[in-house]
Length: 543
Image: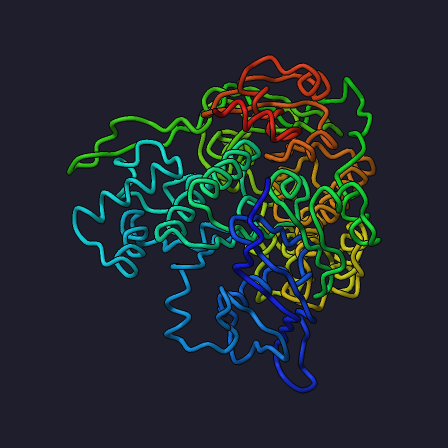
C-alpha cells in the first residue's frame, strides 16, 4: 500500500500523568508518532502500556484536570489540540476524528433505540432531521453490514449481538465521514468470523472514504493484516516503531520479541478415554418466547439451545465454539440450572433437571462457573478473601475463620496469587489477576465440573497463554471436567479434547478436537477455522 506521506496527525513527545504530587502516576512518558493521510498505524502493547490513554489524549477525552500533560503536542493538520478550547474540540470530535471503543455494550445508551443513537450524531453535526435523517441512518447501517436495517431501527442495544453492536458503533463513528478513525481494540470482544468481517469492513470503508486509521490492539495477528506501520508500547513509552513487515520479520527490542512469541500453546492434557461421565445433557432445549400484540401472546420462539446432547467426562475438556448468538453461553447456563430448560441434565449419574432449589443446593458446590469479564463478575465492594470465601460460607465448609482463611489462601496459591492478597480489593489487580481470582472462587469449593465462559477473551495474549497453562495444570491436578466456551479457536485448540461447533442453537459438527481441527466437515466450521488461523481466507470467502 502506498500512501502519499501527508501527515494528518502529529503526536510529539506526549506525556500523560494522573494526579499531582506524591500520588502522581505517569501513564505515558514521551510518545511520538505521525499518522499519514489514508494510512493505518497500529499502537500495540499489553494492558497498562498506555496505548488507550494516548488515543484518548488525541481527542482530549481524558478526565482533565486529574489527567494532565506534563509535556508534548498533538497536532491535527497543524492545529494544536493539547489545551485547545472546548469549541475547537467540539468541531474535531466526531467530525474530523471519530472513535470506536472496545466494548460496544458500555458505549451505547441501553435506553435508546439504534435509530435514535445513530441519528443523534447526524442531527448534532449535520443538522439532519425527519426523513433525510432516517434515510442516512439506514444508509449507514447498510454500509456497516447490518442485515435488514429497517427492522433494526427500533431495536435497543441489548437486542443486538456483540458484532452487530460494534457495527452500530462504527456507523455512528462514520456518520460524518471523519478524516481519522481511532479504533480502540474494536474486535477484542468479538468472534473470529465477526472479527474478520469487522476488520474487512474497516479496510473497505477506509479505502472508500480515504480515512486514516489509528488502530489500538494487543493482537499481533490483526496488526499484520491491517496496519502499514506499527508502534510498540510498553510501560508508557514506544519501545520500537517502523513498517509492519520490518517489525514482524526482524524485531529488535526484547519486549517486541516476547509479544510475538506469546500465543496459547501446548496441547490438552492426555485424559483417560473411558473416564466416568460427570455432566451430560440429553436433548436439551432452551426456547425463549417471542410475544406480540396487546395481550402479549407467544407467536414464536427463539431457539437458543435446540435439542443438544453432550457428555463431559472426568478430567476432559469439551470446547464449545460458534459465533455470538449461537447459544454457547445459554448451553453452559442451562447445564448449571441457572436458566430454565427442557430435556435431561444428568450430573454424576443423577438427573438434576427437576430438583427443587433446596435439593439442588448441595450439588451447586460441585458445579461452578467462571465468567468472561473479570471486571463485571467480581464485586468491587468485597475484598478478594470475601469474594473467594463466599461459597465456603454458603456451604458451611469451614469450622472457623482460621480454617476459612486457610482454604482461601490455598485456592489463591493454586491460581498463582500471593495468599496475602486476600485483604485487597479487585480494583488493585490487573485483568489477568482478576481472572485468577475468579478461578480461585470456583476452585475453593473443589468442584467436579466447571463451565468456563470465554475466560480469556478480555485478556492480553501473554496473559491468555498463562491462564490456559493454569487451567491445564488445575485440571491435571484435580481431574475436573471443563465445558470451555470460547470464540478463540487458538485457545480452544490448546485446551479441548472434544469439540462442539454451534450455530443458531444447534450442533453443526462435533467430534474429537484433533479431528475437527484437522478436517472440518461443514462449511460453517471451515469458515470459523479459516477466520481463526488465517484471516485472509475468510476475507476472500466473505466476498
